[in-house]
Length: 102
Image (tube, rainbow, N blue to C red):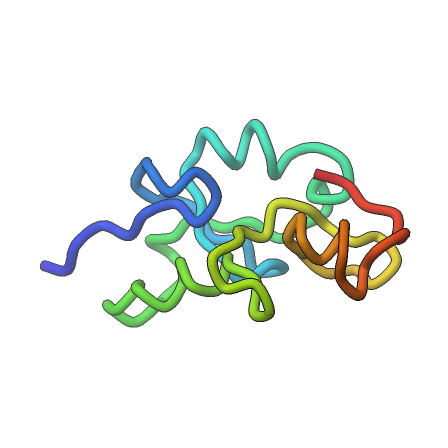
């Protein structure tokens, strides 16, 4: 049996849910605290066990990281571009000055 995937937000607890909008996985606590408010409220979240994902989840955690700043989590959502971004992209990068939500 493959190991339980870890939440792409807190990186601590086992992931039980998948956000099809962000293409990431998260634990139930992060779903309630982070993904149920603001712009994230409209995201399509499903039970991870029902997604029909292949057994290798190691790639999902990487998807919750910034492509440009590889060590940074996608902790914000750029409302102008409608995509998850990291803090570096918001402060210094191409999303500087854009409207955002955590």
